[in-house]
Image (cartoon, rainbow, N blue to C red):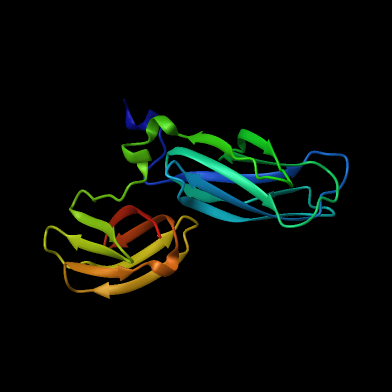
Length: 202
């Protein structure tokens, strides 16, 4: 297939928009914690929505690898009215599945995100770059190595929101990064010009 017509997003992740909207007659006031889990029940991303007077809709923007996921949204406050509904959308605000917020037991909302584009292990497994940069979690550290023997150089670890979590410079071809403080989820590791996608688990 011509790359210009490839329906899959460019690796390693694509834009996903978690949303919440009040679809009831009353006014929903409060905050809602949202979490997206991957197929291994690891936290892929999380955040907080807010609704109130003049705020009938809220959204966030994340970068997620193709695969199967589940989203939950949990209210932090007692119900005040309205009917908040959480959902996911892709760029262009093309909506995916939706689910009513429950104040009793969180109701999970499963969804597939570019699933045909996912590679093995849900498309989010710890990977090796074409040049041989590997990143493998061992306990509380992430073991990095360039098989070609070249120095790692400037090493940066980003979360799915693109925030810089860790940065260092390494002149050797291997190193260990302490990752216990970053929690579980999907991260992007850049060493020099090489980028790999990693999944961290506590």
